[in-house]
Image (cartoon, rainbow, N blue to C red; front, side, top):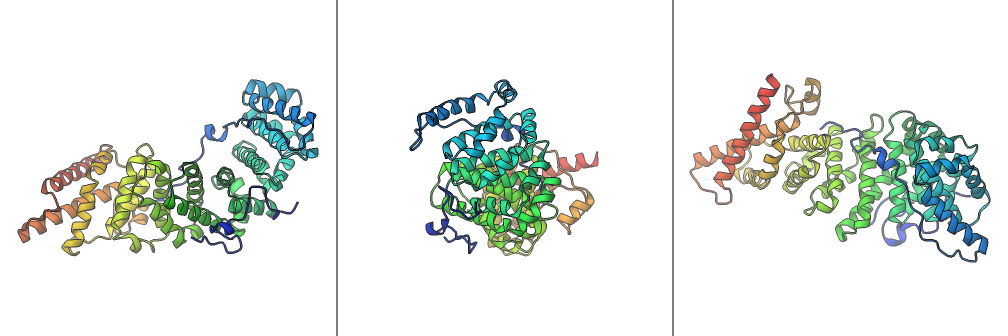
Length: 464
């Protein structure tokens, strides 16, 4: 079957004002590597069979097959039941049905059963060792049914996270197959299928060894970078027009895939040099109401850090964007349990504040910085309750901030800068003998004292 056949429920989006595959454009401090690497719980999540439905033009035998197949689909979520079925040659039966069945629903049920079997690590090896089965599964990518494609992507993703990942990668390395995966991701209108398809790409991108070496280079050649940016642009256009909860997991999966690519040692430069991508993630960071898309904003913060560690040419665009700076601080509470993400967000804050010459900028500009910092003083103080500094080696610190020396963390560097800005504000106020009603003196003193205490504690820890 030709890879460009139209998939049922997978329609080109150019007609909806989203993107035309032929055009590739949507209408409308340290690199953090594998921070969101999938947990075994995520990888091994089983699925349940949809409610039995009467197959169009189906025979009594086909209806019975569906009814009993759905029962098996749900039963194999249990490892005990799954092992018993494998011992009774269920894989061979499913293999045979995939070869001969022309019913999309029966194929979906076969794939769903195999997908749940694959969730059990020991049984995944049986799937791999069943002659011809994995190649048959890969071939299902060319089916014309959305539900089948979701199940195929789930199976392939599980395989790529398993011990036999190289075997699965070898089965996928044909350009026609990789092109088909990208085509489905770019053209489907089904959010669940986008999530599953990008999840498959994420499984490839998170592997920096054999799988990545086999599949990432051809995917890059086939346009992976532009695809991911186009998908992000589409989801961001949806997010800014209307909050649709079912699309949040899609946005998160796309950001995780881009983040993984931006952390790749060999392939980060292309995606990190995209101005469109930088603008998209900065826009996401500036959202006022972040609660519903909190994990997405955390991923965006890490992505910004990875981009700026690759190139500093974008820094002038946001160096005086106060809503962006505010957005970075607003994201910190959502990363309270993620040390790497907090470190990345503080690195961006430190980069931005490093460009502020508080002794030379005009008072109105300094006032804007002070107002942002005071409005986020509670966030800053809460984050500083964890006084353990994340230290860099001297080489890391110099690479990230060439003008700064020593082993200070990005957070410490940022807090030192904040302290200096607050001190300069106090000096200007005393010298000019004026009262600025927009800036509360007590709030300035409170944040200044907090910064001083943190810096003093860090120096004690680093000196011990």
